[in-house]
Image (cartoon, rainbow, N blue to C red; front, side, top):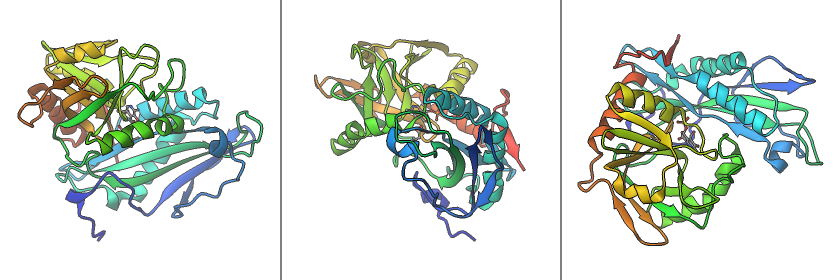
Length: 339
Ligand code: PLP
Ligand code: COI
């Protein structure tokens, strides 16, 4: 069939058969178009190219033992994309259009949904761009919304194994009153130098601090941070952090498993008190953190001494993945079966 080695898939782009797209013109969204073309024709003065008027999403569909395909919490991604659109003054994609597009892409590319048990999933990438020509700095009057799919394996090649992070103070990902809370491309551009340097220095990624005081933990690369101590799941709250749907789900699961949950400012100094730590997001699900090194002071915070994930981190990961793959009952109504 596809000749895909599902178990060895990286987190990367792989061509599938179809994608869908739709245009916002004259104040309204048009019909969803299906295409096999991987390219989009774009005006050279489109506002997304010059002024960064764009937002994206990332969500996954999982194949269960019963062979059914389950889409995880897509309504939350639709809401977040609407917030992103509002934040950079783009036309909002209605939830119904977002849902229709995502489900259509899954149906059209059903053969690319990895088999159950391979640890892989179908990643969906919705994208909203200002497509109208604009030379003055102002919002475009035309937008394009599209969704493509690609089968993916684990985000970090280590899989569910502890990775190391580095605390940095010489780069900020987002300003306190900037765009950190929405999923716009500029945040990722701003993170590239820090994360590439971290890779070169042997780390999976960086732990960004709050841009104003450099006191509190912000994001763990392209993921949210959490720490666990004394039966409490602690995760930072800040206006410059993207509200992760994985983190939102883990907070519920943490309570289901008997942990308390705290969402609040978390100072760097508190790192030393956590028994376990991790980074969470759709791509990685959970990346256990083995060690965090402060790049300025050299101080090390070690969470895994034996190279294995901690007990709570493992329980959280297994429960969330169990729900996503349909092996554990979905008591919170997070999945939609896509026929
Ligand atoms: N933080 C950032 C900066 C991200 O890019 C992502 C990924 O979407 C996350 C956190 C995790 O969010 P989610 O769990 O919704 O994928
Ligand atoms: C995530 O899903 O956690 C991500 O950050 C996706 C990334 C490729 C942007």
